[in-house]
Length: 206
View 1 (cartoon, rainbow, N blue to C red):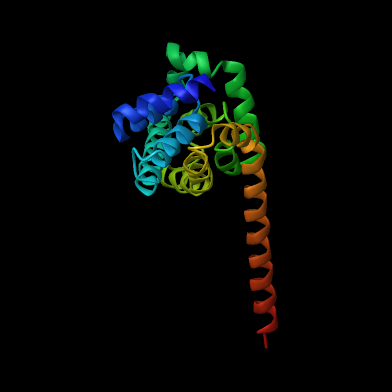
View 2: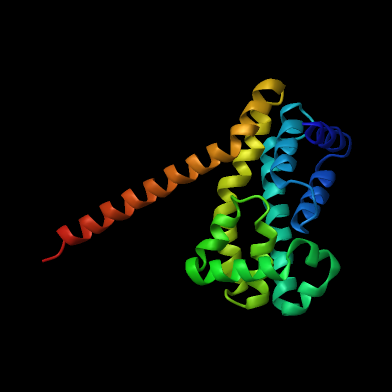
């Protein structure tokens, strides 16, 4: 967790601006984990260097802006973007082909679940842009819905565990699994609500 401690130090000294810049780096696909960055933002709020609710709003904006930038670059430049040196390191032709295949199988669901798959986000978002499989506004809607689950999870986890390093480290290790559990519960709840609505609609039929 050396990286986490380094980020906490930098964020505590430089505030919201440093958190925002770090999220832009994450969005560009550079080797800075978004999850750890969000947790570090929550930690400095828990330590009193920032307001946690403002931190949540800032990180949501930063995450969505970074994702949108990647998508729009892919949408504008198309497959030519794959020849850029930085992009080529993240998205090889073989990986690009695999992501396209998954889009064929799962459609827009790929965009939603990519948010919960570290290492896949940038490749999926670039591919969505370059292939023109989805409009920008649909992409932004799907990405926002996914981010509304993951971003507050990591930020508030950091906030709650700011003064208990051992507990925080333990739950960060469990975090990805816990996030999938939260996502599963939400999906089940939505299915139950949809089923109840459908049943009521049938009962009201003449």
